[in-house]
Length: 319
Image (cartoon, rainbow, N blue to C red):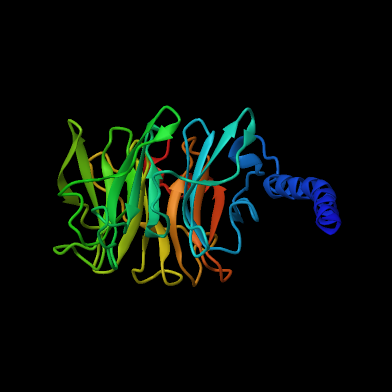
C-alpha cells in the first residue's frame, strides 16, 4: 500500500508541474499568429512593382491563389491548396485586429479553387469540384459554380447554380458586377477555343441566356480567369494566345460605348513572365491589382498599384 500511495503522490506532484507547462504550450500555439491591424491586413501597399502579398502570413510554402477583399476592407478570403488543410480561408478585422485564417464554413476543402466575393459583400461565388449530391462522387477534371449567402456573421451552405450557367463540364472563375451580371469561363462545346469567357445577366434573381463574349476577347486558344470591373468598364483575363511572354499572360480590355470591347492589351513585363500568371482581381476600392504567379517556383499572390490599369487605357477613353 505504501508503494502505491507513494506512486500516486509522485504522479500528483508531477501533474502539478506538468499542467502549467501544457497550458503554456497551448497559449503559444494560439499566439504564434502576429497581431495585425489596419487596412490590407496591415501590409505596406506596393507601388508600380508587384510584391508578394503578406509573405509568411498569407503566402507561405503552400500554394496560394484566388483572393478577395470585402468592400469595407474588414474581410479577406483566399485559397490555400497542397497542404494538410486546403480550401477557402477567411480573415476578419475584429476590434481593429485581424483574426487568424480559418477555413470558411462554405468551403469543400481541396475541391475548391476559384471564388469571388460579390460587390454586395453578401454573396460569394465558388468554383468547385465538390460532389453535386451528398455522398456522390466529386467532379473529375472539372468545376461548377456555387453560391453562398451571408446572413449576419454566418455563411449558408453553398448551392449549385442551375443551367445554363453550369453544364457539368468545366465552368470556373466567377466574377460579378454591381447589377449581378455573372462573368465566368467555360470549356463547354461551341466555343471559339479550348476555353472561352461568357457572361450571364441576373434577371429577377435568375441567370439566363449565357452569352459568349466573342472576338476580340475569345480566340482559338484558352481565354480564362475573367475579372470584371463592378461597373463593367474593363475586363482583365488570362490567355495563352501567341505574342505573350510565357505560358499564360494577363490581358486587359475596355468596354466601349457601343457595348463592344477594345483589343486586349498585355499587362507587360512588370506583371507577366515566362511562367504562369493568372487569377486577376482588383480591390473594391480600386487601388490595388492582385494576381497569382508561380515564377519563383511556388504559387503566390502578388499585388501592385492599379495605376497600371489607367496607364493601359486607350487615350480616347481617358478622362
